Amino acid sequence: MANSCILDIGVNKGDFIFPLAARLPLMPILGIEPIPELFDLLETRRAELQLAHVQLSRVAIDDAPRRARFNVARHADLGVSSLLDFDAASLQQNEYWQGRSDLYFDEAIEVDVVRLDTLIGAAGFDHISFIKIDAQGVDLKVLASLGKYLDVLDAGMLEVSTTRNSVLYHDEPLLREVLDFLDQHGFEPYAIKSNDPACAEVNVYFNRKGLDWQSMEQRLQLRGIALYDGRHYWHVPSATPQLPPEALGAIAHNEVARARHFNAENAATWARVVHWKGEAARLAGEKQAL
Image (tube, rainbow, N blue to C red; front, side):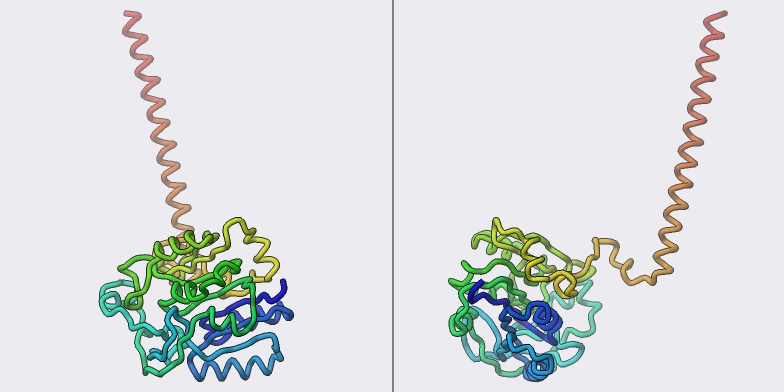
């Protein structure tokens, strides 16, 4: 499609943008990453891979353009860095967040914050095939900043907290607010996948109502990119995913043994019931004969 593009908001180390760019050499892809060292790393890798159709911008995205403080977590993969502050109460009270050791900021930097519709207009795109958003608490504001370009967006994915008790950042929206926004703007979710074993955050995959999302996945070759495919926790007990395979095998073996035991017990009980029913019938017959 003429003047169409893909957007990656919160590129981090490029786990989405570079595999996708290799699969779609003719599709312009615009990546946004505000952290200087990550941006420099991305630019170097883009040049090494000779991906001329990838454009990178070192800005943050929000619905209100400004110069702002950006909280940087330089440990781990810098993945919890955000325009927002952590929600102190949630970090203290939520059982899942209590177990995380990476939830702190090392410093704050100044960044330029722009709206997406400004960038899209300047780049000359008139259609957006897909948008991936991982902006740590401001994902919905990023999407809203598309403005009039929401009408030419096919599909996308974003991250959001599920409940007020599980928010990671101060004043971030919840899942219900995201779903309401999507519905009001002509979109519907085609998948919601937990981003952690506690289901504190989920990735919402959405498409324009009436659009065949499976055909879209195939056309853009999204499947097989780990960051797109996501995780499958299946809401098993929270301790189970942490167990080694041999422990899971033992659990499965024990459950089968228990099932066989209870089936055997049920069979024995039923045999006793049948026996005593027969005895009762026999005694009733002898009594009637007398």
